Length: 492
Image 1: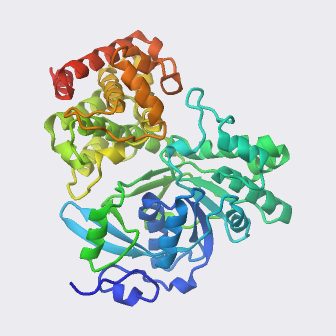
Image 2: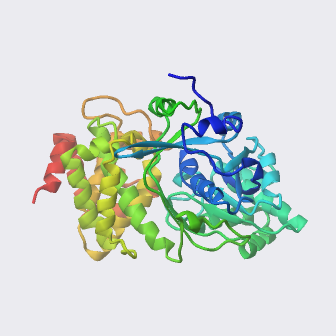
Image 3: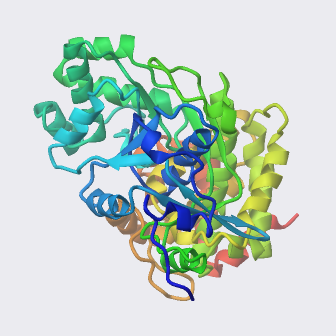
């Protein structure tokens, strides 16, 4: 093989022979957005939309400044700065692959415990949007009440030390305090995480923390800033050895490559207090119906991921596509979604819930996407309350079957006990794994104890219709195995 080429501004001309390279002069870009959380999803989704807008010669004063608030972000910063913040995106079509060099990010703020440089950069007048991908579990939600968890140690720290915050929210508040003092004006807070009403949740997190330290500032933020809701969609696997080798197969030596499916969607509420890029000119949708798009996606796609990943993991199936090739798992997905989820989802213009299920069936079956069941099953303590339980509540309220969804909860419980059916250990796979694992093991003797975790299930343990189905499925899986339970559910 010829010598590999590393992404850098200096190498862009050479890279253009290997991949689709930026068609704009990166030196002409100037900052407009600080994005917190530079994981694969952001770089394969939001950064791509902006990159393509720059390609069209538009809005080049909206480039991204990367940021992070976790110690682990320091290594990501180091890798990205070493290649001038360029990222190789590899699109995985069912029929092949293509590569693209994305250049919409131009800098990465130093990652510090005090977040002082992040605060300073967000306080500059050129920053008009602060966007975030900090995961579903990163918004300090009290899962029992659905409200803000003001007792979390990070929030307690930020309330006591507003000038040296630990959290992204504390840093945003500190930056807005400086902007208010200097007369710079507000910016838009744009959540890009998989949460129903993510903008509303971001607003609540910011205002709740601000009220603890500076009530007058909280009022100013509420009146001046905007927090649009958005729905994001693209399957972006984690990067591992296969992904590095895939980048090298194109002749590119990228330290942080990203692979992604050949599908993207971004629906955004058009509520930006300080302007915005024209993302709609490169495929994004501005809509006042974000909540309906979001409900369809979160319940069918994200919920569907949990429906597939748990039996797949317990049966030792490595990827989502391989799980879809298992006839009972695929049928399980389709039956649960069709009978127990879709009845509670509003059809969108040009897309019914059934048509959307067909779309994700095709997307999940793309064998080029090496998306692991382990990655998808990660953080069930956030994903089940967000993606599965709302359909259970709706089903109980409307007297529609929740048997398959109860089976999903039983599979989650068995999974968290930490053993696959072949006896192999399941490594910790949740921020709350220790508690989940302890309760799941105890549930081996007393299954009802799983539903008593009211921080996740609320009052569902008190609903006999759901609890009985959960207990029956748990007993069947424990006694006869996952496949027997799936066959029982799928039987006419």
